[in-house]
Amino acid sequence: MKSPGFIYILIILSFLFHRCGSGEDRVRQQAGPSNVVEKTEIKIPGFNADSAFYFVEKQVSFGPRVPNTEEHRACGDWLEAKLRAYADTLYVQPARVRAWDGTVLNIRNFIGSFKPDKTNRILLCAHWDSRPWADRDPDPANHYKPFDGANDGASGVGVLLEIARLLSIHEPAIGVDIIFFDAEDYGEHENSRGFDRDSWALGSQHWARSPHRPDYMARFGILLDMVGASGASFRHEGYSMMYAPNIVRKVWARAQRLGFGHFFINDEGGHVIDDHYYINTIRNIPTINIIDQRVETPHGFFPYWHTMKDNMDIIDISTLYAVGKTVTHIVYEEGR
Ligand code: AHN
Ligand code: ZN
Image (cartoon, rainbow, N blue to C red; front, side, top):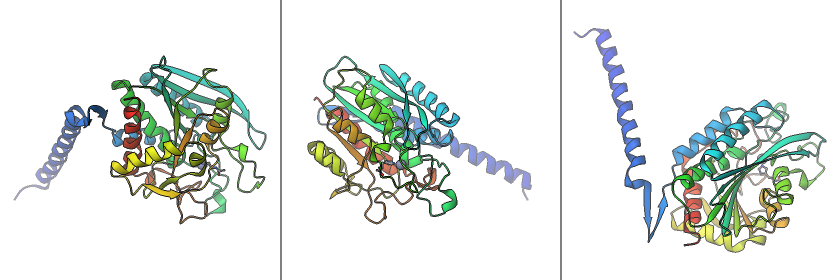
């Protein structure tokens, strides 16, 4: 009869070999030609959703990214270093803005430019801060607590960091700017009820009035907001249709041709005051919002919007993949 010690060693060995096996497999997938997909005559790099997921996880690991906190500063420093490593040129735009409750927020917008000399450019953006208050949580005891914002904030940045990584390896035909806006989610608390719609998107309002380059222009922009939850549905958001209907149609058609029609639905969504609203109205750059809009929730967003449950548990790799692959195709097809 074999000793329990021998069986124990066998179990450990089998785990070790299993880990080695899956590690090699992943390396082969990344290094092999399957990383680049042939699309008619143009090569479009493969969007790695595991990498995007890791970028989301990393942001969340700093803690809630609430302006004026240490967690916010630390995550901002990491984002800055990451985007600086991938982009040709990095701009940091620090600012002090006044929130609806009078708090002065120390914020930073990060702008990573790829092929900065090209005049033919597109803009991709997301917000990197998280909301200070879970004021939609079912438990009122949480209404003044911060939360992870894994979907609301980190997901869009995670997808764009992965696209930045691809752009650093495979040159696009056009210039690309990736902007991480600060202080999108410091809007009025649910208990305040002042309906000050300009209390949201403070970072993008600042950038739209004073862009990193005074004459900045782009053909169009794409905002990613809440692009990581399981069961996401992206509908034609109201201001996107008002200011950039052809871009909405182009992106939705591309997503559907890639097989993501279950996420990208040809239905009318609501009007959402978000970063793209100010890019459209102040900078006149036609910009769409890819944002998770649900018909089954009272607020019209994903079920855990502004609650303590907006954490890594609700992040679904297949949602990140659908959005990431679609936007990657749009970027690399542009100007060809
Ligand atoms: C309003 O509720 C007015 N805008 C929502 C924008 C938002 C919040 N996006 C993410 N969190
Ligand atoms: Zn929010």
